[in-house]
Length: 136
Image (cartoon, rainbow, N blue to C red; front, side):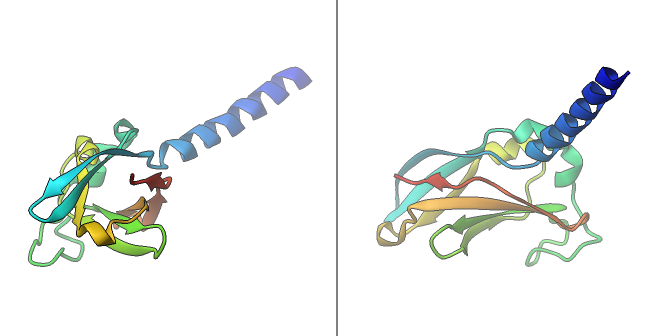
């Protein structure tokens, strides 16, 4: 009986750990190349499959993104780790797979060495902060 209870508690704790980990975006550097005088940097969220499509549905009931009244429920912002300032953002992603095609462009002299993203679920008022990745 005690062994069953210990196993049950361990599985419960492990389940919470896995679900919490699944919601942490796993960011990865993909590539960079010159683009009209700027450096274009490609990033991806490796665990994009864990996010339900509902997170990226149009959300006209929430504040718009500029002139876009149908911006998505979840916005993604890319940050410079050294300054914690936003570099670029996405407010109209429509499906989780689009997390594999994140990017930003910057003048070569201002290219950050480290970046991270924050996914902001505006409906649930939750933020999911990724790991930090180096930009070579």
